[in-house]
Length: 476
Image (tube, rainbow, N blue to C red; front, side, top):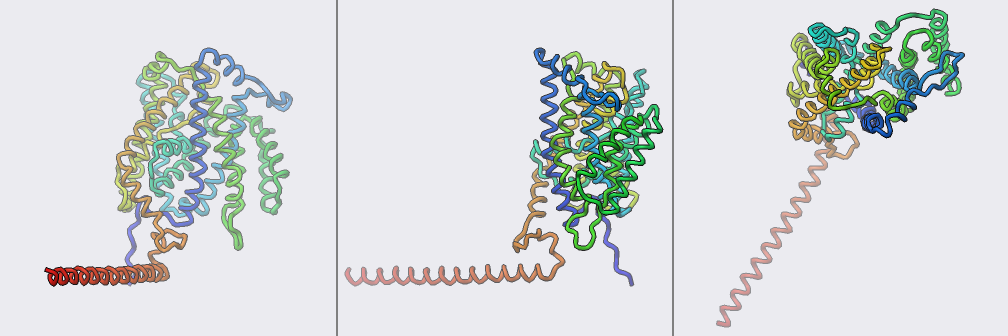
């Protein structure tokens, strides 16, 4: 007879290596998210203080770069097309790692974040479309509310101080990786108007050389960085959004470990580049993209124009319903069950948190309404408003369950045998139970020793008390 199969748990406990990787990745993303939050606030202050407004516009629109190479771009353009290529390079490595060593490697495990991400993009797009059509607005911005900003979401978690369990954090991270993949496809397919086939062919040739050098084991940043810059410039001039070059190069890196390797090349490079992405590239993009003029009238218009209202509803309502519905449907039709420590309210809270669509949403908003500066600013304001509402709702929902999360984290971190590995990962190891038995034996021996000491002290006190009473009687 075959052994009974253990029912698969949705958002169950991670393996120890995956948990360690997720913790390291989220630590960097959380710090980067706080910097991103600060950059967005700085941009809003810079753009809205009357004495500083002109300087913000001057810096954002200041052009720099070789015009002969087609790279005479504004500072804001460099931030969106240049610096974000670093962000998407890291996203490409993350995606590759998830495909070869993470949750996406197992089709059954991959079904949950993939379906949740797809539903979390389709429903916001549908919400935007219905809102725009009913209000007679433009459909150009349908893709704006489809993206989730993992760094900003984690920054919110850092600010509210919630002890979100590692399984939910990993779900949020994997969901965002899949979300980034489809956002990249949307940018490549729907926002490429004309192609320069010569430049595109050069970019593909450069990518082929990049791949060949990796396969030959060539090392040295002085080889790859100049080549990456050439590939990026060719991709930009081809008409395809330049961030696609970053994703393509990230996907080419090997993310599986070979014998004797502590880290794969992809993991090593990601470890080096992620702080540059989260700590510099994305915050600078936010600084030159989030600077929209905000006033009472402008905020009111966000809820009256069909395009901006569609973005807000897409982020706040569409994301929550889409991700929660996709997760529930996956659990329902794969006969999986939710982890015993979690409730569906937790999934809904994380789905609401995914409505924070900052970095990529701002980028898609610029691409969707390119040439219409007024609408672009209004869409950015809608992204900020929608993200703020989603963050506030998610914070309230997560705070309600924060006590339960704290107990789960304590259980995950407990290491009573001091082995350096949490006890929860050693429950099937006989050596762990022998170590715990020895620890309990020592504790039992110590308690027996203390019991004997206390008993002896009690007898001595009783004798002293009894002797004193007899002496007093004789004197009397």
